[in-house]
Image (cartoon, rainbow, N blue to C red; front, side, top):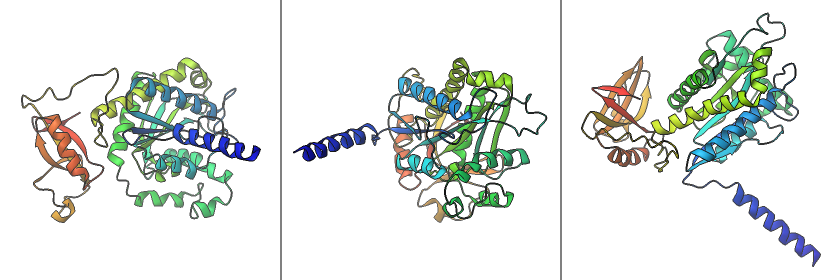
Amino acid sequence: MRQINIYITTFIILTFLALSFSVNANDFVVVLDAGHGGKDYGALGVSSREKDINLSVAKLLGQMINDNINNVKVVYTRDDDRFLTLQKRAQIANEANGDLFISIHTNSLDKRNKKRKTIAGASVYTLGLHRTDENLEVAKRENAVIELEEDYSTSYSGFDPNSAESYIIFELNQNKHLEQSVELASAIQQQFITTAGRKNRGVRQAGFLVLAETSMPGVLVELDFICNPTQEKFLASKSGQKKLAKAIFNAIKEYISHYNIDSKAKDIKLAQNNDNLTTSDDGNIVYKIQFMSASKKVGSKKLFKGLDPIDFYKDGATYKYTYGRTASMQDAQKILQKVREKFPDAFIIKFQNGKRIK
């Protein structure tokens, strides 16, 4: 009888946990990844540890999202002080069907660097090949966590976090979420400046394994430099952490509003932001569905999967292809659902006087 009771109790507990961590199919899912944890302390300041700062900011950010944006589900890769492999972090995000992935980190310089105690500023990274040695060093430091894993060389197919040659793979990486990732990164970076008062170190690219393993738009943020005593004090303070969380929150809210999210053809509304982008039914603003970007002009209509007629515009050296044209946001949403049957990552954009506006 006692054994039966144990089985029943175990079943109830497991059922409760399954319900507690389930994600509603109608939710837009934001995955918050507090970098490092457990035996991996991350960068160290005089009196604080990166892993603690990352977790505090992630939990504050998650609470802000839960309190202020409807129909958005927050998933944490960790919500306590535990060690997770990079693959496990990505697995959590992918199994949750995440729509955004934000990995939160704190920057530092090598102890031999003369700028260690004076350098300051926040930066946001998207996945790609590093363009500077500085970006490579940041990626090396964050990827070096795999050395704490057992048999990491096998798990990551021979990837060596300390070898520049290993990072060539990121030049070949075709990131279909690059545009959305860069847009989110730009919004976060701007908010770091205006909301958190951080020095602008810009949006950058580098080869972060945790971003490479996830299948959604994603960024890695470096909040500021823990090696600088002044910035460490800010990073470790509750007021500083709230400002940093608020900056990222504002950017997420902006991203959701911009993509009308409806990123999965869902009705997501901002609890405290009722800005109506459809005030343009007078014809001044036109909505289109962007579904493809390419570095060269696409020569074959087969790539459009039957969508016709197609239009395109140039953004720098990139060709961006659109389908549909309407003055009604409601109609644009209907077209979007149709296009996503062929191109799941399509999204709504706005034009005014022949130019894209944001």
